[in-house]
Image 1 (cartoon, rainbow, N blue to C red):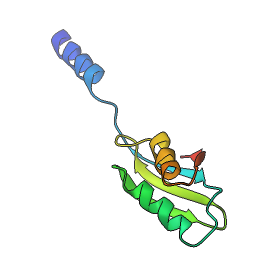
Image 2 (cartoon, rainbow, N blue to C red; image 1 turned 120 degrees about the vertical axis):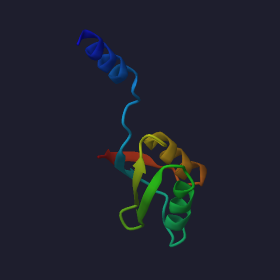
Image 3 (cartoon, helix red, strand yellow; image 1 turned 90 degrees about the vertical axis):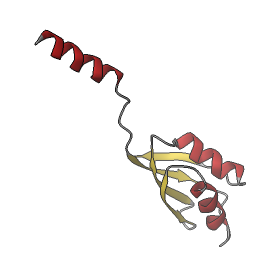
Length: 93
């Protein structure tokens, strides 16, 4: 019995943390024309782990559903910024 408990504890301690889907909204204030949201979405979609991207030119936001085991909010913001549209995290769920 003690061996079984020890093995279970060892397995739990060495198991990787479970990754999951997250949703994050970014402020992208430089989106001013109809092509801007397309450029932002395309840059973000190139990252591994992106499930969906929705942009809103009127609100100047990008909402991204992503696998947090494959990418991060920092990488998403960097992708938009590197495409010429600075992005800042507003909310993460």
